[in-house]
Image 1: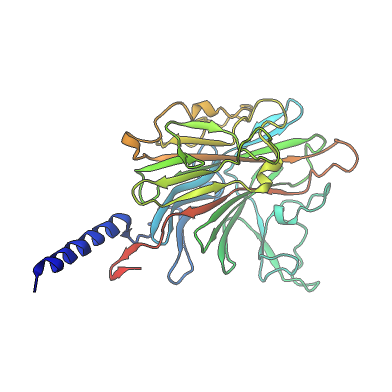
Image 2 (image 1 turned 120 degrees about the vertical axis):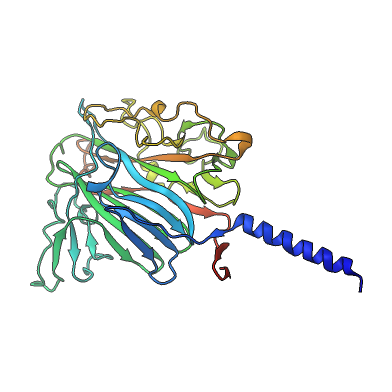
Length: 388
């Protein structure tokens, strides 16, 4: 028998195995630290695993709401940290605040699913449907102890985790004086995930003038490790740090196309695409005209301890200074192989008051937040007994 074909076949198989290994990694799970809680979903053969902290334990200048760390999908590291360390309240008057995100607030926890809601954990955002009425600090005038046929409930702080079958939802609520902010992440079985920001008001304070709330998520992507990540805009790699706007052809005729951003690992090809939702376009950047919020998306190089545009959180510092984050550092690494990158994303809500008949909706909760969709192949994880 001619040994050459067998030799070629052996060489081909060895090369194919090496190529597979270059795109694969050993299945990993997060190791949670002090004050962190591990979530594995589903409990058996989990797709998503991560560590979470409630607002009172979160990082950043005066906290960052619900904070997630070491987020893994199908055994691959996806995010080192996901949180919202920058938050503002802005009024049409001279009033403005740089709000804090480290004060835990109560949510209503039903002992069974309440018939009026699809979940057993109710935040102010779930309850605040009336344009002018408030429902208080634990949402909110609903505790019945079963006397009217509704299940009993109790007011609790912390983080709630609920399994909805095709996705898992993580929820919390935090306060800044009379403001109640809800923070959620939904992780879907298909690898997509959604951060969500919601605003409520516990007692109607400062409810006589239109105001805005600007929330900035910070997503430290470490896809398959911290190195070799790039940020692309409409599939074109950004070479250096940037700050830019969303672009919607329906509302901005000057836009040639809608903008999408991708974070990709240049070695494995895995990544996520940022897809703004319709709700994110309802309240555009700088709608007040005061120049405090001029960017929607900011791409930066990871710098240790850099969680915000400021190291402090002074109440009266009204403007988000994106130049403190995007200041010209190289984003695409040597020869374009990438580096350790961080993506900031702004979405805001407006509470309208005294803008004419029928326009007041200041007490109605508004929810915003983008969708992140997986890119590449996430199933090639090498387990102890071979590939998945």
